[in-house]
Image 1 (cartoon, rainbow, N blue to C red):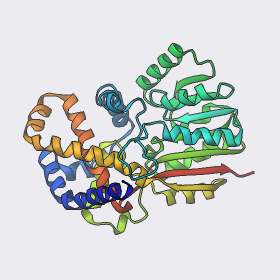
Image 2 (cartoon, helix red, strand yellow):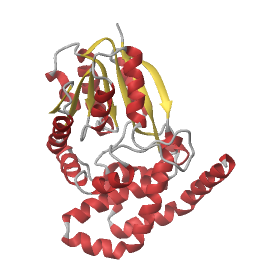
Image 3 (cartoon, one colour):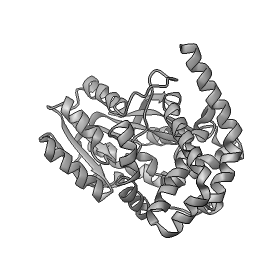
Length: 331
């Protein structure tokens, strides 16, 4: 059985390579790819994107795979059966227990799934979730009230404004697929500087996210373009590489404790999305017609761009990778 799964996985990888050029041509019929790549996005663009997609396209996605807005990880990989969306918060849970954390902050908590998942399992730990999207915090607080969590609070705040919290408040700060939106070195510098002051002695930061691959510059032009389309679809100008995070962390009073590659674990999820996107792209003309009259359709088309190209970017870790970095504040 395992041998058959490996064969299927290799076959899908081979098909990805064959269809990359074709997929880019199809996407080019739907939108102006050079304009999408060259036009910068800002915070307002990101807030507007998440205010709309999380209320529509993500609800459809959650109907099929459960709550949580992050990528599904399959462990062990490659396998066909999804491990649902609890893998990332379970990784955080292990670190909370190991470090005996008493106070935890989640950056980019969205609807509060990870924070509430952890709060339920750690009733003696104080959790705080922050997000830049007001609608996210409204929904998270409603979930918190409905489920009567007394050890959790949510509020509007972005990653580089956590100086609103007192110094040495948290034992752990984590983010699941959120810090990718810190798409400049200056933003990442400001975040780590603020986080260092907010963390207690030996406090940790855990980043679970997608990153530009160290081989991005050496990958093919088409694979680079696939990554750039995915980034702009998610309203990110340019994802950082793991190396960028680690070098900056070393300069700002952090030690890199862990660097875990999870690309193969996340790839089956994005391959499934790619297959769905390829089917939808057969109706490019209809999508263009609907998009002329519907703002919602334009947002959905943006999601389609990212879903269609992310697996291409992850292929062989050529342009993108997925993983976890753990940083510890130096004494």
